[in-house]
Image (cartoon, rainbow, N blue to C red):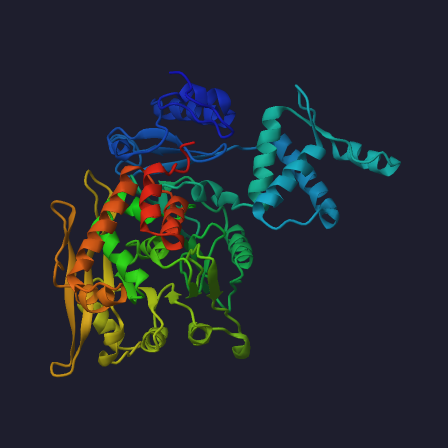
Length: 575
């Protein structure tokens, strides 16, 4: 099969394993070793889809750069039958190349004090590539450099000789040096796989992952000894600004790509050795139209949320762990007027906002109580900042009461919360440790509920399973009156609007704010927005920046300009 395209990373047509092997020596070595051991040749799949789940599972797909993944499910008569294995295929250095790498790194460290400054990892990588090229010379044959030769040249004042390498060696050396100095070291291949959702490492066991297509898989990656694992976790925690230690063995934080990490450090707490869990987030923020295309919500659901956020309604996105709450929260934020101030308060920075005026604050942990900044402190500061919206990454405890106090003072709040239904949500808020008085629920306008479900055709998917409006507190019944607006039918995988001519928010709050003389005209406005969003989906305008910029046309100009822009907009990536 012919190669369709080969760019910097090497993109090959499905089935062209020979092309991949010819380009990457480490893939060739892996395939030949695997075929010799198992008697089965992998298939190069390219971009994964649901059909990849079909047996036999023995396929390779590209991650990025020189990185590939091999997914294999052993047949019943082989060791490991019943499990799905995920193998990282990345460049490896020979013993001679390891010596070259050590020499290059030592030279880089000596030059580091006089090296130019950098403001991002991308600049750092580019600088390292230049420094590595400075100390190497590409020739058709590599020539090793002995420590004695280097020392003599330094002593005689000739400077350091360039290290002779061939092109493939330079690629491998550059990749491994940058991987270890800038990127994620032994976890680089895992964090490069956009198909992985959660990464679970317990002690020295092989790392397991939740895969979007294949479910739970086990990798060929593990830490060789506890000292190496603990050294890696200490370095990682320091890099994200939340150092872990025996005195503080549990920390939560965010990696540079936005993925959430939880580290449990110390054998006293984690009996099988230090452990960590990484919940990966997509490098690009998921847009509202992408969620519509995936079926997470319908265009009608999105239109309803758009109306609510444009008009300052307070909202909770609620659901169980890993149900996609934060993804949905980030996707709906472009619906907020682009000309207003947004204030976010989080323990772990996950909220992504493109509004021009965004005040982003995070908590700060400290052994010194006076230096500690907690969520309660951030929310108090928010009330003085006079934002249009206060966004709380996640409500877990007492800050929930402060969030409701903010709503009472007229500051709309958006947050995520752990509860699977409106009843359970109210029970959790009114019980320990949050203890929000029942009568305060008048200030919350509506709640979105989301779940992980079985996807059509297998695998998992996320679905908004319901939206409930909060009508108010009933003092006679000492309870909260709510009304369901949307339901999800799991059989048809379809969302239904149950609130036609029954929406308390649309008729009694938003219609007046939008100037409708007949309050029921607002349902036509929702239909107009539903149609516009569906047109965006049909035109494949699903990139987050496309969606934000189109909505910016609406907020900076008017509806007519926005509607026209949808029809002529060029989607990102289609040029």
